[in-house]
Length: 140
View 1 (cartoon, rainbow, N blue to C red):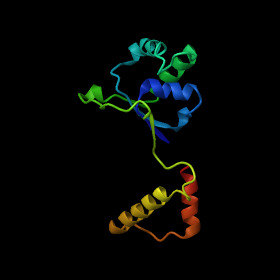
View 2: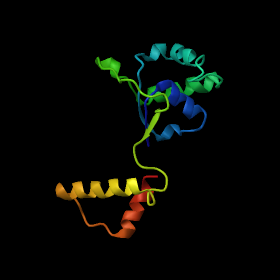
View 3: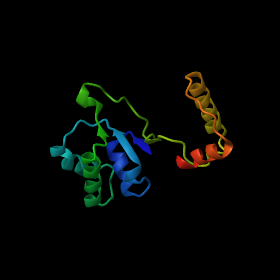
View 4: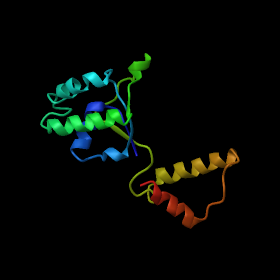
């Protein structure tokens, strides 16, 4: 599950097959557009080499429309806010850890801190090791 931070670059990564559209939870976009201007926005992105240049126009439009119509585009500018500047290479964030979480010490530490917070809130239940391993696998 992923959160995107650039409408155009997210479309790019989905069209290229780097990200599955079904893994997208939301895209927090710096754009301020509406459905009637979506085609012209995507056409503009097709001429930018850091966005959609060289990709299939029809496929880019299809992905843009799917994301829009599924309600996955959030535009803070619609609410008088600005998303803020995002570094160019920061296109996606994983909602859950991916990769080999059992071997990653940072993920292990975060998991332990999370469990400690649950304990402080009175919501921690005892989880045996097999259940914990099952939980790791369910988030990949």
